[in-house]
Image (cartoon, rainbow, N blue to C red; front, side):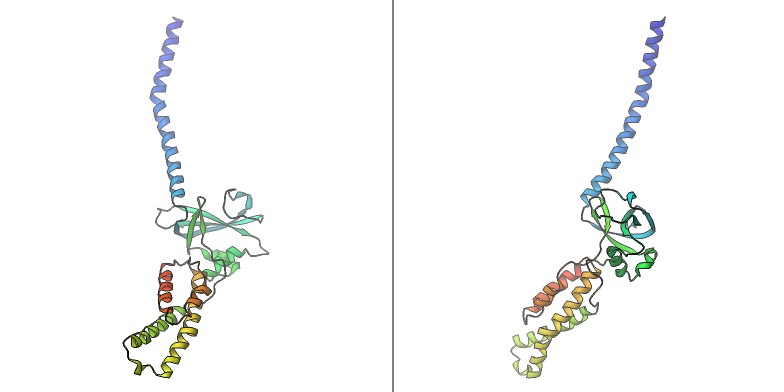
Length: 248
């Protein structure tokens, strides 16, 4: 009788395992797959740039920052900025900055400067759109290496100088030398060797400190100072400029 009870209990136990085991295993597998898919997406997107809208900001203890976070936090407190990713169905991520009441974090100060926000009013970042890059699985704000410089109006000077160069070049190619008086030639040399380099330099610094364009302003200004050749180099510069993405 006892043997029969033991067999019955064993059979019931096996039936229970047969009923609940596969469901439990499927749940675990599903959860594991979801984590792996997120990890895979982040790894595949390393270096990808997305935009995030600041929805919350808070001061937190530095020890709450993940150890693997790519930016070192050397202060006792950190500023945690929560952003909602653009086009990702309400997904939010958190990025961190050093925070010390007596000393402004230079990285945070440069980000605030891009948005024309004083360092003591970082709460004004709420609602602002910020360009992010994925690094080691974390979303980091793209922060320029320098504070904003240059002039956004430089591009208009570039276009005017380029048009003038093309006009003079066309006249010369068509053999209409009688139209190229001494004042015109002097103006062309002035525009080519002085005007274009200056406006290119100003515009390039504006790009470098307000977009993800990370090239050298002096390099492009030097190329813009080469008469004749600068038509091609300025066109190349404008092409790289077109590909730049604003940080704010």
